[in-house]
Image 1 (tube, rainbow, N blue to C red):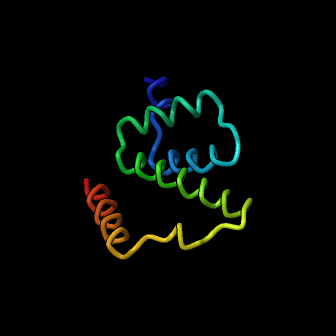
Image 2: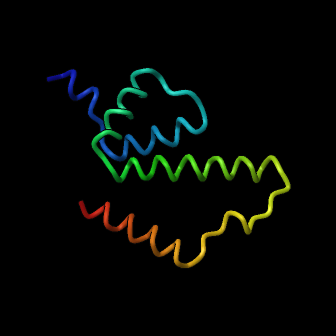
Image 3: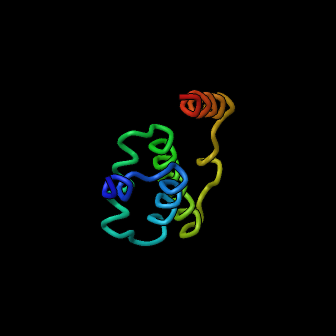
Length: 91
């Protein structure tokens, strides 16, 4: 039972690991914990994808003279994304 507790992590811990892996390498234990959590939590899966996209775009903006209009969502896209987040958080 103790092994299970070491593998299963909360959404808060998963979110921290997602952010941490954007900046530096995470340990093998952390990778396993994150993958296990992402297999069962759709909200954290969505956060992981969005975080990676944001990190990628911010890195690109920082490294290039980049047209910021490319990164803007229109109102329909924003509403659809918000609806998806709200729907997933209610589960």
